[in-house]
Image (cartoon, rainbow, N blue to C red):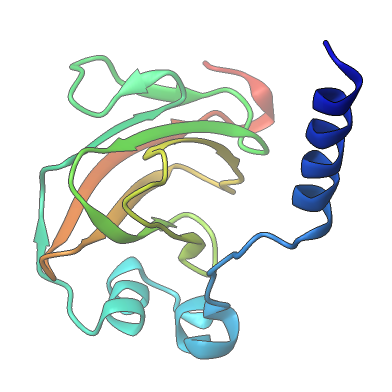
Length: 159
């Protein structure tokens, strides 16, 4: 590699490192505080999106390593770190995670663009058995969802 080419590439890399990336994210805790204090999933969805009519398609959900469309019952041996994987196949503006086992229903909300990867892998806490609900607000204004009920074995025992 020639010295001039090396210097120009180095200066270009430095310029990219110095210029801050444009990040567009909304702080939903400030803009929609009722979402985070809602005690039921329906209340949290209503506070977040203004409606609760869900279309049960467009999202694939796997919790505790069992897919939501599987006949196998999902059991989490550790309620402190339940693996939740989901992917969204519809164009979406936001993706939210809710559960009904803890006092507050909202877990997290992601702001997404058409350039974002729509595959997620998170871990959540659940104090007891319950249902996990993933909701994606489509660019068409519809709410797409997937739900999965799972048993949380207290004390880490699956019995």
